Amino acid sequence: SLDMLYIGIQRIGNGCSRVNINAEHLGIVGNDGETHQGIFDISYLSSIPNMTVMAPKNKWELADMMQYAVAFPTPIAVRYPRGTAYAGLAEHRAPIIFGKSEVITKGKDVAFFALGSMVQTAEKVAELLKETGIEATVINARFAVPFDKEKVKELTQNHTLLVTMEENVTSGGFGEHVASYVNENDLDIKVQIVAIPDAYVEHGNVDRLKEDIGIDAKSVYEKILNIYKQM
Image (cartoon, rainbow, N blue to C red; front, side):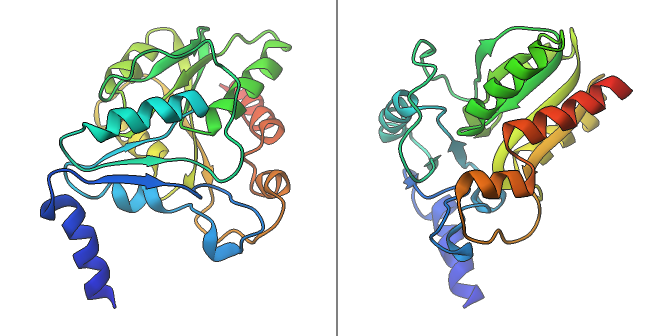
């Protein structure tokens, strides 16, 4: 019932001071069925007071986040996708600091603020943009809640477009929280949210599904390039 659902969520925030949630099967999961797509967790977990939500970019960061979460004093969730963990970006392994992101590449004008598995996609989009003469910044957000507000402010100094990227629905998601922060603080930067539309995603091949909903590298590249040219 809805009462039991509410009680379960309430207990995460109030019932225990130390709750570790290792959430696998999140994001687009493929052929397991549309009800198995893990695309709503950021939205509901971010509504819980005192909650922390992290997402790793690769297998090494997953291990680091698991170790970080074990000693964390308040409720925390580590979300990661189904399947083989990404092995790229091994050279980027900065220590995990609460609420802080990690810079992957430095550029200007366009900045990708990507969460978890979408860091790999952001990296590919940045490479495509580079071929057009646009040197984009790629940031590994690491924390969906709380996200790195200082980094967002810093990006406004030499960027005009901030692109958030996540495998979660738009409503209540990471990008929506970033956009709200930018608007509330009158920061001089345009925010473009790349996320899953607010609907159930059917089951199927992961790459094909990402293409269908527009969060694959090619689709994001074409969208961002068009937006940038119109600015």
